[in-house]
Length: 480
Ligand code: BGP
Image 1 (cartoon, rainbow, N blue to C red):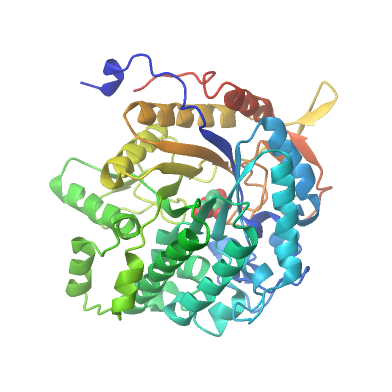
Image 2 (cartoon, rainbow, N blue to C red):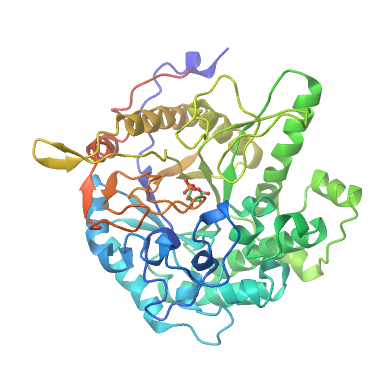
């Protein structure tokens, strides 16, 4: 019997549900070498993960200017407030605070920039949700130290977080330690600042790097609770519900293995110990991690909530000859029942209900959907004398996904909030394009760097304002 038939009146979202939007410093701030900022790995990734890192910065890197949030933050936050945002997720650029990552003292100019951002959020009554590391490892830590393969990064990260907690702790309640921490398995450079090409990186070094990040996350979770007793610290996972391509038990087992690869990060963040299936993977592959007693104690500092990004589900098959499709940092074998976006990401709103139920039942921790949205080639048009984008496809995508969040809440899951990804057009992570637009706000800048940087409200801007004002009541659709 479907739960929907048990709860015909699904009702609105909980009172106090945190509606908002999400961005990342490297994809929007610009000012990549100004304000005392040092280079990050993003400054040598002009094409995202679609080509190897360059030696140094190159002028074709759209992120050098981004959408100039560094200077336009007040205008953009005012637009978020106009939509009624309760929360705004953004990242602090690590190399704006510690330019080389191993500096003894922080860059005061960088701290002052985020003071100004927090001032604007406070002015509009918008709760900050801060990502401490969003694919923005200082380039020096990557190139000189080898990124997270080097245990020294734990100390550098701890120092960075301590400065932020002491500076902003009275103004920021919600913190995320590492954006999509599980993506390091597929993309070690963007995710872990590891300069070794993926096909040359041994599993031993990869899992030792993952261990360092998990220890660092545990340490700063403990530090946060000591310095900011009211703060809530979350982990952040890229969530892909994994479906077997066929009912064959071989496909089901393959799907289980793929799911385990991501579950492990949540299991350790939520339970504080390595799960048995991961220890078996280590045994079966001769991986012997260097784990100290202090590390084991650090890992027991579990998170207060689990946040995740959701764009798509993936299919798995035991038949390794079936080609995998595109996706957010990883793809599965194409699901013959789903449509895809212009970038080939398969669209599965019910997958969001599935993953929320799955994570809730697995960890019994409050959940936060901190990324969801559709990247599309939006076209600016003149409607009654005003420039806008008729993005009904975005309204449909978000309506359908939010309906499934509501169903998951009716299923019993505790969901703190929802921040749509790229609430304003920004440079995409995977392909470093501006033409892959996610926002409710169009930014006039193109892939060739031209454009006025002017902002224009899309049709979805007013729709999302209504969704927030009604606490989700205007959403239409019912459980499948
Ligand atoms: C996630 C990242 C975000 C965002 C999103 C969309 O992996 O956390 O930074 O970019 O993917 O991906 P893309 O920008 O490649 O479309």
